[in-house]
Amino acid sequence: MSDSNMTDFTNPSTFILLGIPGLEAAHVWISIPICAMYTIAVLGNFTILFIVKMEPSLHEPMYYFLCMLAVTDLVLSTSIVPKTLTIFWFNYREIDFSACLIQMYFIHCFSTMGSGIFVAMALDRYVAICHPLRHSTILTNPVVAKIGLAMVLRGGMLILPYPFLARQWPYCRTNIISHSYCEHIAVVKLACADISVSSYYSLSVAFLVMGLDVFSITVSYIQILRAIFSLPTKDARLKTFGTCSSHLCVILAFYIPGLFSFLTHRFGHNVPLHFHILMANVYLLVPPMLNPIIYGVSTKQIRDRLLRLFTHKGT
Image (cartoon, rainbow, N blue to C red; front, side):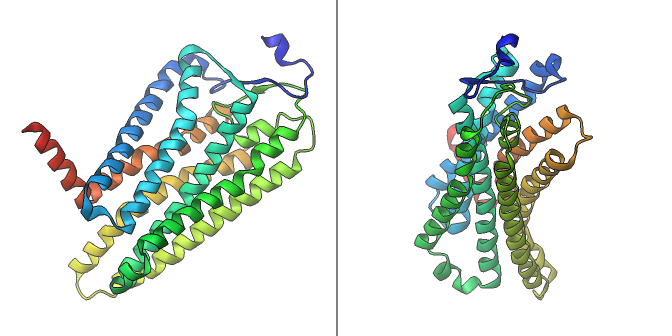
């Protein structure tokens, strides 16, 4: 296999994913927390979807957006973990060229969608706290559906050039990807051509999406905090802030590792490769695991529905 990996070819039929280079001996041990995180993410997000569907009192914009986030998290984590575990458990490192491009698209597309959903959730909290009497008339079900569709289309269209550009490059040096999944830049760096178009486009999308989304969320929460601190009593301020705390925790869990992974990939040339790849996995796997836990613990309606569910099963 090693001989064929370095031969000249322009359209490789497969790529070879190395997993986490330098930590091959620890792949089985690393797979344990990854498998645990994936299991929690799947169970937690399906639980959120089930509870919101079964509980009529949760049929409102905040929980509709939470369901969109749950679906996004499920698709995102499922795009990565099964293939990663086959590498770690069975040393099956090959991935079809087209399958690699599809995985690349799904990872970046649903990451972008997730970021957009955070903006929508921040908008919902802004309207609920700053304009509570108009919340039900501003964020109607059709408006929520249009916002969700806009986030899907934005993610789908912005990331669509990634696989198309990657497919057109000639790959004549190697088909070995020093990563555990088909990350966009990790793939196109293998091309023996000028990949400036792919590189600049992905950089522009990253700054556009993260920049605009973080700016929008920041502006929303500045207005929210101003409204909270203008409340007359401390109890009212704490209660109102409590409704936003879960959202803030989820946002921080998404953007901080993501920003770190992005910066180390682009500029952290002295960062060890295995550390960068571990952070790239943390960025994509930890938020889908944490989101249902944070919302489940901090949201009274979800906690109560869960308790009733287990109580009825116990009786």
